[in-house]
Image 1: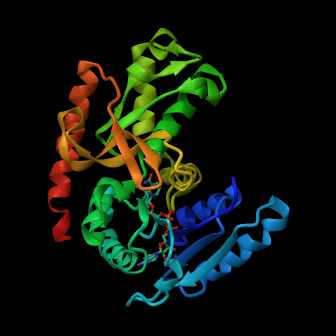
Image 2: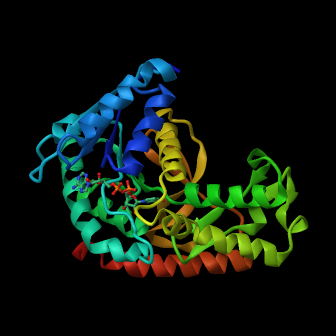
Length: 318
Ligand SMILES: NC(=O)c1ccc[n+]([C@@H]2O[C@H](COP(=O)([O-])OP(=O)(O)OC[C@H]3O[C@@H](n4cnc5c(N)ncnc54)[C@H](O)[C@@H]3O)[C@@H](O)[C@H]2O)c1
């Protein structure tokens, strides 16, 4: 595929800079723009990434831009087809994602206002935590149609679950299919009925207790990394997830993946951002896909929906 278009990544921390690197290394964009409020940080990382082009063999140019409190510098994102929002504080050991809500909501408001002003036709992929709430806030502040504001969580949780299953069974990750829906947090819904290894149902290969153990580890997957790092949170797998979503949008691929999307009647649920499978294309979400669920999985998804809906109800006041 020929190189084209522009993608912007807001926030040049660990998540943002690794996402920018992955997007640049795909070599499918003309330009990757990386921004941050810390003076020179985005420019420095962009220069560093550009100097890796010859070794890694990509031509995409990375542009770094410091942004100011009043939106200075945001002209750099004009014309972006996709904007990935990574600006926001990460967790420290012992913190829940909800502990970040007030600070990250302040950051999100400023970022989303400037995206609406400078890139009004873009597709937004949010990763800032707490994920479901910050995605809802990004949609409210930008005023973009729901299908143009997406959150990243399900790809990551599914990738973590897949890794744990592959490790347990000592098989290649490529032979494992898993799926998680619901929310990025306590109400993550593992869809055991959709999990297979080389086409065989996971339930025939692992005991229910072992599957539950891997589910719990997946649910706490972010906290496990945070506890080991002691400062900051995961970014290699998270950036792979966000970059993969941006690629699907850029290529108008129609790929189906678990993402945080607005539900409007699917599974009998409406009016909230929820982790579901969706088909991605140039306009963002083409369609939310209803995965066949067992009665128990459907009940868990309804529980997740009720929890995220309640939290999203107050988001506009943040
Ligand atoms: N959705 C997920 O699956 C997932 C996974 C991991 C991390 N996260 C979240 O991603 C976010 C970023 O994580 P990180 O590890 O990169 O943190 P980080 O601290 O390394 O980087 C955050 C960056 O945002 C910048 N920033 C702050 N305010 C800004 C603003 N107004 N405009 C532009 N930039 C601003 C900071 O200067 C910093 O460089 C956190 O909220 C974290 O919880 C989400």
